[in-house]
Image 1 (tube, rainbow, N blue to C red):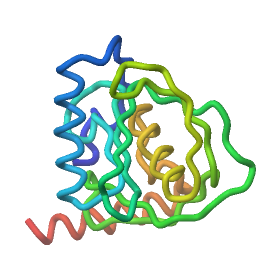
Image 2: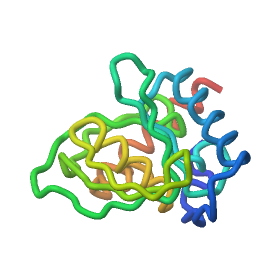
Image 3: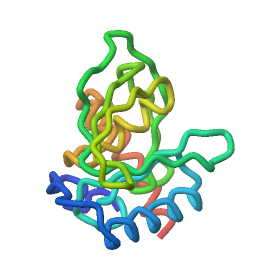
Image 4: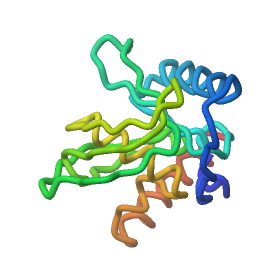
Length: 161
């Protein structure tokens, strides 16, 4: 849960895709589908590695497993989307991000690939890469708005016990 220091830590790269990485991806996908969500980064569940999963398909049966994802190109056109995180339950905010991105990553076969993502897929991929770089979605807000949302969030969490 935020403000756990792991959510503010840059994750080291993965050297190769092996059975351990595959097991973490499986754990991440199970957690993501249970939430339900459209993406998850390894540090969100305590694994400090540059691993992410996304699945914005309607069927929730088209996951993309990424190791060491990096954005190569981002569109100038922006898209606004209401973002949230299981690490900040009950908190969400509208965040503007590039509408499309080209990302390089190692896939589940250990191959380096490049893929274009648009709309919700692009938003989710960028959100997960932020987590791998020690950022959460509220870091994109202006300081006053972030402080106000966090104060409200912690007040609500305290009431819930």
